[in-house]
Length: 96
Image (cartoon, rainbow, N blue to C red; front, top):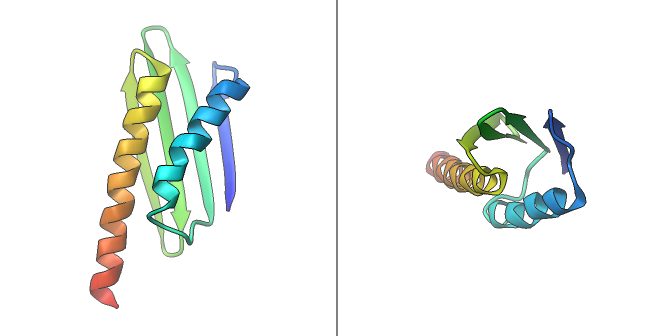
């Protein structure tokens, strides 16, 4: 699994990097065949935005969130992506 965290108008500090990796553990316990994870954190004048794309065999799972606080945006993003991963896994079970 490749993890790439990048910032747009924002420097990725070790604290932000560790926070994202710690939160990703919640998603990784639901799915194990992830090929690649792309995280983009961006800062705009009045809002913070977090985007994530998970590449799994046969599908790309994408989510984004916007909040005033970057850490809150990351939390919302992890909640969304976790729900999407669980939903994807349920669909996979139906077809097996």
